[in-house]
Image (cartoon, rainbow, N blue to C red; front, top):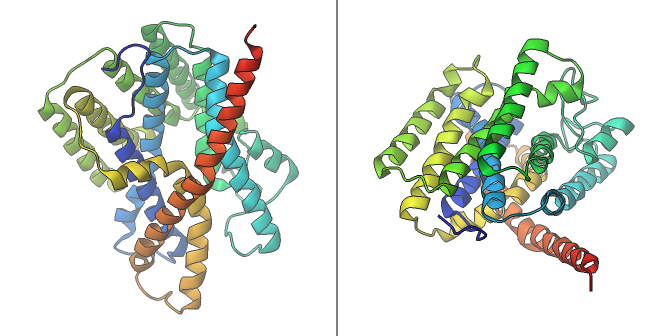
Length: 353
């Protein structure tokens, strides 16, 4: 356990971030070029669980970092905004510009004034081209709407003790999930944030609380959690009627718990490639929405559309991971450093002399 006031990087969590990014990329690559269901569909569909792994990881990281290093709500939100917003706004703007110049590049893209504004402000809104679906302009940004909401809720709880903080976030998210089941709201914001999916963040928070408290578990239990998680994911195609927070959220929670608790108790070896991909996971997630359509266009123009979808998905995933890492090194890391420096200067200017 890290001493109070000292944060650390969990390598196992980094590796899971890399895994989550890879799963999402493979699924989207397969889905983008698929014209029907083939034998690989069920396997590729497991990639959707990558988002759930990200949500659990987010709950873990936010609870852990604020648990071992005290910070104000204002400082917390400023850090999260610097981390998330500039890069997301950049790629949203690039997507809009690309659509205006070459409308055929994206399959599910539309522009409407309020919807575009809502997208930049992380406000859930119904997509102009999809009946009943709540997506922002950059479609995969739906996950960031959940992230920003979780940050806002969590920022309000930072004055509480760790145990009270965990109880409060559980009560809020559980209350929202129950409200969604009972009321079934139609308004986009209420419908979106009362989805039981919000409970996945709480799972990550609970794991972080255990790590901070120094809970030590046997190696065998960690291995058992991994086995159960793999079995759960393998069985998930047959559980389509189950809520997502159980179908994919429960296995994701098991993976994060196994990785974090094992590393906290026994340590874990460094795997450079996975660590770097974990660092770049946010950029990989955002840029693959450009890389995959570009690759699909090349694939189709080369006359390869009749070949199995997996033959496209694999090289497209490798390309997406590579482009995402380059985007991280050249754009995200530099932009984040720049805005963090501005944030530090702002804090210094407020310090009385």
